[in-house]
Image (tube, rainbow, N blue to C red; front, side, top):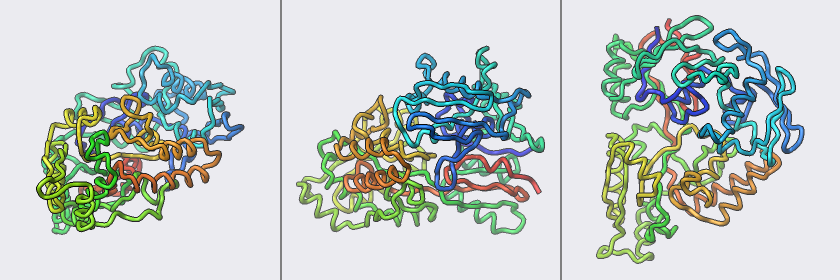
Length: 473
């Protein structure tokens, strides 16, 4: 038995409804999907390869890998069509429907082949087909996939007796795996040290990681700690309907007042790389030529003076964060750094539900969050287009810029990925100029494991695919 410690339990094991990170990562183990991504996050065949027969007509042919559902039935084109037809039906309220509404109809050619007909051209279309495929027969009977999943992935479901223990079995060798939910990170680390769990990934403060590294360096402690570069993007967000924050010069002054290198070095123990954009520079649509925002408190003070703020009339802002201890410490450091240039920040911390609800509702001036597991550049429409203000999207800062909208629309309509990438690079330069977000960093991933646990590879987006190959020596 291998035991994997989790900070939070999955919400659902039905990929048609899963949006939280834990559910999405576990569902990758249970279900196969048409398309996946390579190291540069380019779409690559998984269950199927494809041909673009016309700008609005794609043909997918299923291969031989991942074609056997865990009940012994064969995955066919009918199962693929049924899965996506369900998502596209507005009556089913799938959260993934919005990104797939360009699908006009799906036509099954034979058991191994199906065609997707689109209402408009989108050269990135295959990258949207990443939902795990479910069997049509069980869908027709209303099977409860959320608690009793049935897929064709490398693991099959065994049991979920309570929210704290989810049991799977690896198909290739029968290796049993239990996901153990332990909300408190300190308790999670103690369970690892006591041998009650075998692996932990992420959701640990820098202090706990440092503590485990010290254990690793002591003979007989039996702990291994590894880091790997990640793509999860942390940023400082603003409400641009606020008259003080509507001025790009004020937002730039805030950015120049933040010593990100010091935060990463001292607060995060070096476990992040500084960011200039939502997409990392090694993404196929990333912009490696973007400069980093320089720490320049003198320029920040000058910009604030030019905007009318003085020691007698300082810029005053509310900063919202969660009650997570690390996020509170980060907020305190930001508060101190901004105070150095004359910005007075009032910190407000809330439980996660209240905090996130306020952010989605636009009830904030300034906040910090992370985008997790971003793979495709269509995220820019969802986050920055003026028609994506909630509830239609995640433009929570109410950012509106005609040039940004035009670049997003031109990129979406581009006829090749090369042309699309060029436009998205221009877009990221525009966003760095206007700063609706202040890019902070991409956080590293951390794995802590018991001695003898080998073969687990950390991925760029933090998925759990390393469990496919991990073993006990």
